[in-house]
Amino acid sequence: MMGTLISLFLKLSAFSLVAFGGINALLPTLYDLSVNQEHWISSQTFADYFAIAQAAPGPNLMTVTLIGWKVGGVIGAAIATLAIAWPSSIMIYFLQRSIMGMQDIRKQKIIDAAAGALAVGLVLSAAWGIALQINSSTAAYLLTFGTIAITLFTRWHPLYLIAIGGALGILGFI
Image 1 (cartoon, one colour):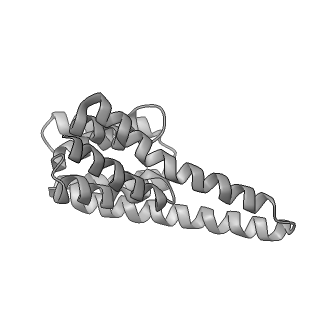
Image 2: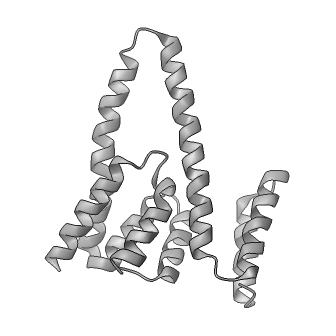
């Protein structure tokens, strides 16, 4: 058990260093690690944890916390949360100090714009990757594409889409 917790800490700490765009940008890689490589959880459990993390208030790192909880209970949850947070927090602290210390405001704005575009691109890429890994039926793909279309072309609140997805799941369509 101790070896598994150490592995959890080291692997999630490494993830934290490349989690540009947040945890959602790394979901396909996190899925591969936790489901395919380490077999900490099943594909369905990953999808459930992701859904819980999205529905709950607070940061999206809850997916990682839940994986840690499954691996090692409360201690595993604490280790996973610390591991995913500490390296990037330290790195961002020093990076932000460096950017704010720049004399050229134009360069600061360029860096901010580039970072924003990069984060959006990584999150969209991760969303596509996780949809390909988790969707297991034609109905699931239709729901995914329908949700994308509704999100892009309407002003529906996301809770309506969650309710539709839940209803389709309860009725056995997904």
